[in-house]
Length: 558
Image 1 (cartoon, rainbow, N blue to C red):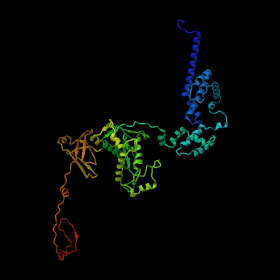
Image 2 (cartoon, helix red, strand yellow; image 1 turned 45 degrees about the vertical axis):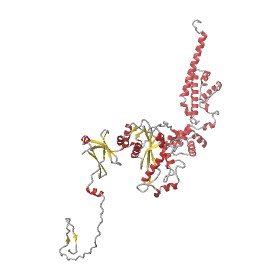
Image 3 (cartoon, one colour; image 1 turned 90 degrees about the horizontal axis):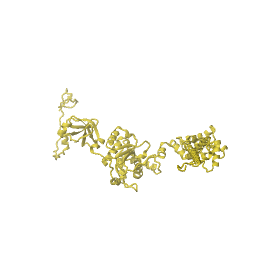
Image 4 (spheres, rainbow, N blue to C red; image 1 turned 30 degrees about the vertical axis):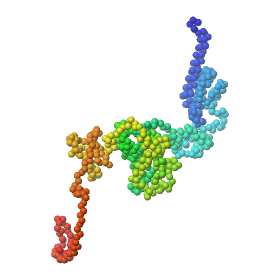
């Protein structure tokens, strides 16, 4: 035994007993851990109506589950001291003790009274029966969730009326207030009581995004109503919508447009101005889910933008914080730039700021017909306001948007836009035009009373294009040139506008007339005509022209 280091008989018996103890402890520990982690959920219902803190409710339910598991293990003849040894190592329970005697007494009380062993010391008394039950708790939540937004006093009255009819004890107003003051109840009920707006801004989280480091990395687009009234075509106060495109890194408004409604035309005009200003498309454009972005014309533009490498992304529904920078712009624009300007009527009716809207007298004065601007004057004012915002330092820690835009680096992922790409995206077009007589004729007006001619002067191009079908891109505001593309939108050539030959009369009218001094006429004596008696049978006088004009005459023949 010494040579091979073999254990003695006593050592073998002692080792076997130790293994038996460890095996028992492992079995107890496993069962109690399962009760603590997952087995407590069926017992939550016993404590939800009694406590308001979710963690406290879970602690009571876990203690209940563990004591229930211990009572079952006692049937397997596990000694109480072995169970207590494992129980002492567990945290987060309501009953925590180092005394085996106290633990055994609490276990006996649980076997006799169940959940009441943990709740109250004086069992069976009248005040214990007045505790808030689960049905009453549901009724309180139901009244608090109501869209009518009942006050605490009204909820208390309705609750007690329901309790008397259904055999429950009445509760005090302070109890109702205490229950509804719990954050868990507030967060659970207020989305129904106050609507999705409250849930969006107070309950739901939002993901922070890394601040762009370069110009052109991210553009955000959005629109809002201009709070400056103008005189519309019906001689009544009207309002324009302002749609802006912001470069998020510099906070500069790189493009904007105004119109009566926020439609696809307004959006396309703002993006067009942005591309004209910068000469490129950014890496990403973020917008909301407005109906203007679902129009067919905008979808065509979005397709071109995506092909050129720009990611056009719409944020998730009810998540306006994903374009928080442009949302913040409208707040700054109104409170810092527009405020104090003549005709400004303050922020929208949804504004909750104390100084968000001026007094009624100021608003009435701004809406007076004599003080209203014309539409053109308002558009000029918008140009001045956007220029003021871009050049003004509204944050002490930041440069003015114009300055920051000039000194910042340009993102490598931008898409520089050529004239051909710009024409395909933003110019008007004739999709299938058949060239005849080596020229392009474009008409304007319902009766086609105005025509624009573009002649192909190069003979090789005439041979190649005459009789073929092309895509014609033009601008209504500038008819000086057009661009021709094939059906695969590949550039062919540029054509300049040809002057129409004018007729001789118009050329003479355009020439400066020669003025000569007229001679002063000599005074002439009036000739006295003698009256002659006409033939009696002559009833009509026939003029010396080919047009037959019947003139009834009773005069005398000359």
